Image (cartoon, rainbow over all chains, first blue to last red; front, side, top):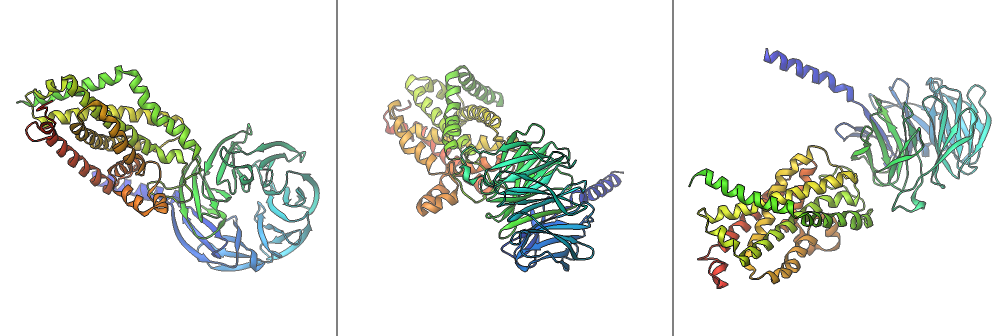
Length: 321
Length: 269
């Protein structure tokens, strides 16, 4: 009887194991490679070479393919997440850095910094559908979860461009704080959050009025204002917390998304750039560019649990369930 | 001599020491204020001082406050060890040491009881400090607060034995300032309490070697690892070895026929 219990216990443990078996994909800008990390063991699994200067990464809806913007190859490569082999390329236009996949998984919006354009790609057909002229140096790009808006932020024009996803026309522009970087919608699509690299602020915009409703200034005791350069921003599914990567300030800001108060600054590696949730949103992963590692944050405790060395200049991060 | 006698003697000594400590509220507060000043003032000024490198037992980047917390616990125990040695000198001058020494139990046992008493006090201080640090957002894993107990006990005994050994050398209370200059400061500053070994190595190879073999460093590392639920066998062996060495020497030192007592011409006290 005891033995049966033991066996069933072992069986249960084996069953419960794969629940956490997610893989973190990290692009390594200097190593021209993708690193695979097991976040539960906190270990680098392997590093797979990819094209020149990989930066933005995203997964397909089914998680079977990873899109990687290889900036110096002027293309977006498609990697099979099982075989880790390249299975195709997308015509991204010149120097792709960041891109966003539409919620239905059909279209991809790529910012082309040098050409001041956003290229729209039909992923299945592997063809560029259209190119949309935007402000100078487009940087961040995102699509609202309700698939109504694509947003492009232009670093030099200091604007957010509201692109109607049906017509692919710019409908409105919002002037924001200098050098807007990342943009991200709340899961209910009601708000758009944007970071300003130079002002050290996070702006919250109302999707209906397209106006800034809140500006949050980030300040860390003992860190000079010049070092506070917010980049990546993500908001959790219940819109309880937003997390902002603060670049060379080496911290992630934990912002209460209801009161807009910064509750905590968590110390991570150097020049923290981008952020990604685990599928259950219990953890957050950060890419730390100059300390060559990723940090793992426990979101229930709001504590950094581990930093894992991955390779040179980690940039983008995507999590496969 | 029955076990009960031993127990009664030890309970008496430990109980007296704890009671004395709890009644002296100023002593309790001053024992806490010292590490807290270091934590709130000194460490706050050096927040970003550590630079980039993750060294075990830490698995990610930490603020300086987090780094020096185990070192400050070591400091609490170091000062406590020295303080009990100071009170031994005082006891000797006042004659209450004689009372203890005429007790018909082995000398080593009486001295050990004294040590355990001092250690118990330092453990209370350490937990009080950890409690305040917790409120200041320096939080270790919960089990770490359990694992740290055996480490605190061993380190307390080791530093207490060192104090005991010193007290057998010190003739008068006035000489205690020398202990401060020649023992406490070198032990504390040439250790991993304030800066990690790799940081010391960057500045001086000699200091690095001294810090590495400083028993206080090993004691701090034992505490540091235990607080983060990890076991550091090297630190354990080193701290344990230092305890046996100091204790052996102290027992010898307190032996009226062989030890330092004779040389001092006091013959007992």
